[in-house]
Length: 335
Image (cartoon, rainbow, N blue to C red):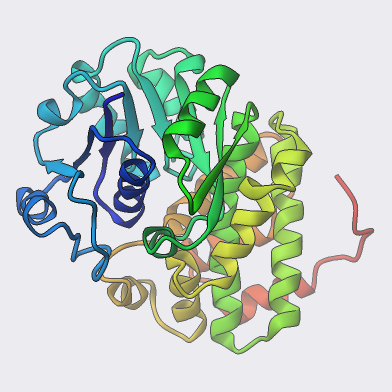
């Protein structure tokens, strides 16, 4: 099986390492910049995104799209959600019709409000049975270090999901299969937004009670939206839902949480972006599209709405907290 990971960011690089460690001897990673591809090939490291991590000698890198995708059996899409469509438009001419796509991107596309598997299907023309998503509590550095972790590989075609499960299975990385693509993707998209909220609360100085409240109510938002879109509650109560949510909301390794913390400390959006080495957290863009998607299906998402107002409408974190606390009281379970 020839596997290519399209994207040499932290998670793309960690995923490529997992594939080689799992026994996939023919694994290539595509890096946009030739100099980064050269360093991966010669020094077996990615100093820009995973400094200090030794990459397998068997992992090869290229900056050529055509070279990377030639005869690929599995194409792992490891670029940010809002740039996936543009990248796919360039890639698909080099991809075989029977190739399997695996999406690592977590988000809802701005404007179209499509999930990433839907973007892949629309651009590539691939059948849903050829599109899988991988999502779970998978902080890139910890996975790259070989720390024990689990994930979910969701695909409408269960036998294909099982094939991918074997391709990604290592002694430290354990994949579970699922056919609930909707739930797996919604869990991954919303958790970035909730992690921003947790970071904001932490930056303001709030403690564990507040963080636990945000995580729990964030899960409630995720479940309401997911169910409205056809997701299974069991998926959102599992690794791709609460598992991913807890990891991303709790760890300083999470870019979304760290970005939110800087906003809570009083930084501007521009300052927070500078502090994350010029990288905008996925949740900053996704909060608007998740909010719009929720509105489309008439689902309340107050935390997501508050994050959107802080990131895009100038609302202060303190005022956002006041707005949330000032909402009318209601039963814990509601639609």
